[in-house]
Length: 107
Image (cartoon, rainbow, N blue to C red; front, side, top):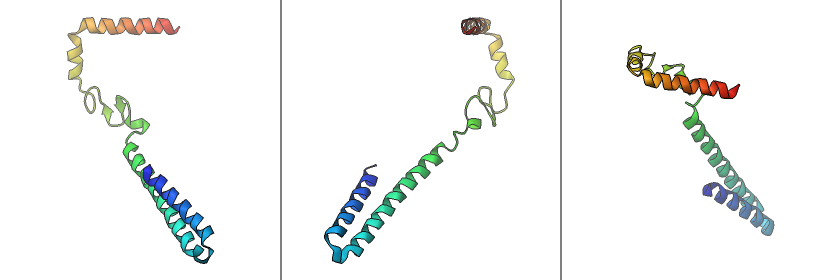
C-alpha cells in the first residue's frame, strides 16, 4: 500500500512542479503520467495476485461435497469409513438427539 501512496504522491508533486515551471511543464507532466501508470500497474498486479490466490475458492470447490468427491470420506467416498461409525452407537445417538433438538427449536 505504501508503494501506491508513494506513486500518487510523486504524481502530485510532478503536477505541482509543472504549474510552477511552465517552461518545462511537458517534462513534469510526462513524469506525472509515468508515476500514474506505475501506480495503476501496482493496483493491477495486486488484484491479479489476490484473484489468483482465491481462484480455487469457487462454490464448487468449497465444502465437504465438492466436484472432486466427498472430502469427509476420501476422494469418492470410501464405504469403509461407515464401519468406523458402526461401533460408535453413542456418538450416533448424540448426533441424532442434537439434530432433533435443533429441528424442534427452528419450528
